[in-house]
Picture 1 (cartoon, rainbow, N blue to C red):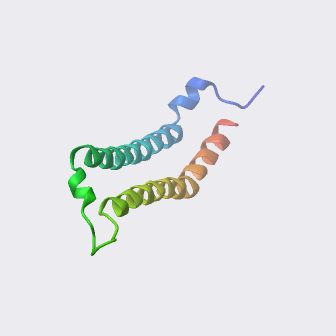
Picture 2 (picture 1 turned 90 degrees about the vertical axis):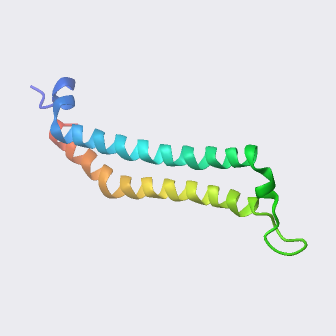
Picture 3 (picture 1 turned 60 degrees about the vertical axis):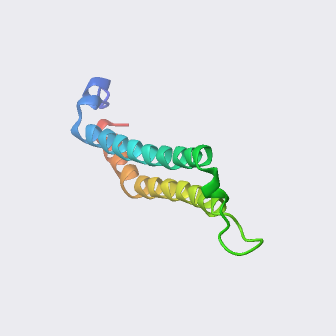
Length: 104
């Protein structure tokens, strides 16, 4: 007889529920932050071009829009890094715990 649990038993397992809730929480939070960041930048482009076109210094200096665009990209990388850190430090160990418990 197999020691594996049924799908229903796995879905009702407290460790699995905790794993799923944590994954959903961080995924939704980071997705919302990324959408606000990206669409905020796009909205700024659409509705306030004069602000983005302002020069940051004297003649030949870059505009305010360039560092904001670079910041948008960098923050996207930061959000990815946060997820990777969380996955490596918490998610993988929780998955291992659930797999060991359910016989996977």
